[in-house]
Image (cartoon, rainbow, N blue to C red; front, side, top):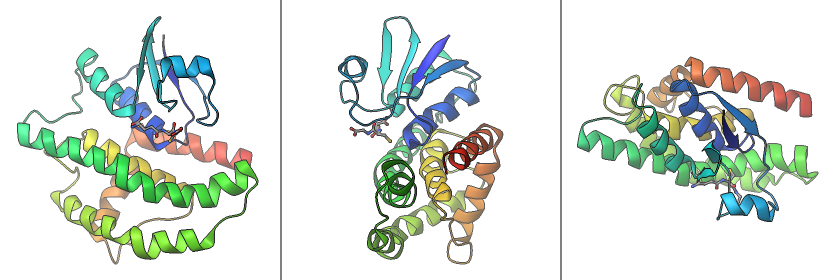
Length: 216
Ligand SMILES: N[C@@H](CCC(=O)N[C@@H](CS)C(=O)NCC(=O)O)C(=O)O
């Protein structure tokens, strides 16, 4: 059986797990924490980051975007990339938007509200949360409100890597007590609520919630 290295709270591990679930691929998981990783782990993850996916002995694939692209080659059904070239490019960009800008803002809230108090015994920086919620996050929500007008999915009328990349950081925000205000961002709020009810994603959310409750 294949192996996924990384803890579930990571938005990048979650991206990978959603793709594995959508494609019906079974895997074992080794919950590697991305702090002070061992030299052995660096041999399979040269940047020292999670996730790493090992489909077979001696094959180790780091990086959620690379892993999902690999899975698409090996398990083409159901497709997670649009076939139209322009939609394909848009989906890759939205995945990157989630991985970079959105993970950065969601990460601040998650780190301050969950990681610091629960796992590191450190105080929550309320000023950092306020700055994120009032200054740096709203422009991203406005951009995504426009993208979510497309309908049920972000690109090409079907579930894709764009949806995986965008919804995953919002799951971290939800765990940290923040949901998108439907009166300010109606399309985005509706879109996220549909996405989080999708079986491959809802199942992970329930598992993660149970783990956070047990750790609290
Ligand atoms: N581009 C990578 C980013 C992975 C990443 O940044 N993972 C974080 C955990 S959420 C990590 O391992 N951080 C440890 C570090 O940067 O040293 C991907 O898509 O997998």
